[in-house]
Length: 350
Image (tube, rainbow, N blue to C red; front, side, top):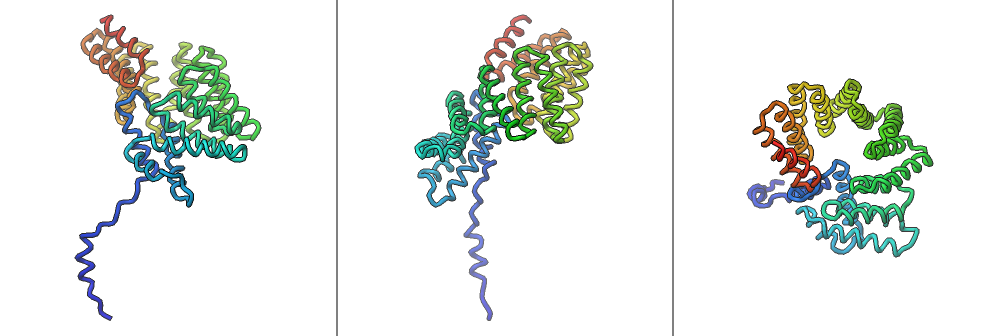
């Protein structure tokens, strides 16, 4: 049978197929882009948590008894607005808490998602959500780990220490070596921040041994970098350089740009300390280029600060001032007030 398709051919130009809905990752990227004018530095781990929260909303949307307003919440998230999505998770959390102990794990999951969204504008709200999550599900290592990170960034090192020790206990109870490695590494950071370098090194080496055993390259790179920082502080520059180069090699092999930027910056500091300003500037500029490509404001600010030190040492005070003004402006934008004061002190000393 002959069929005339001419109508359909003509109509093809009229009816365009609708674009597929944005993925959870695309929505997360939009939310993050909306933070560019706010005083928040977005961490890679936080991006992952945000993606999980959006995926959970998409899953809930597909359920027959989806929470009211979830379509609207997702549309707002597509614009980079988190408030309606937070309200959805707050409602889920409240409902699950009312159901009693049997729904605690689901309630804790909602609290973690709420914490991930609140992180971008409400540090206390995010901290409270993660705290509630671990109270509802004490055996969830992810909840304790996230809580520890936020406590550490808020300056509450004692609380962070307790949270990371909880991760350690869960890892030991469940026989999960990867959790032990994560906990040891984070505990090392706390002790390093406190100035207890011997204890920090002990934990970094415990973490490194497990990461090697498990073949987890990313974890190994982090531990090498952390050990390099320990030797750097102690003044053992040769050993520090050795560890930072090991870290850099792994980050390069894995294509981890953030790790590479950090390693380049640390190597720059080593060469600056040795008095090799040319080599130091080379590494600082490599770090700066990567941070600029990733739009990491804290990293960009740090490297402009380092470059300013190089220029000042050479006696080029105009270039030093220019670099430090850029650094100060960026630190100001992310709310790093102590660094703003520090850089301003350098500028005033010129």
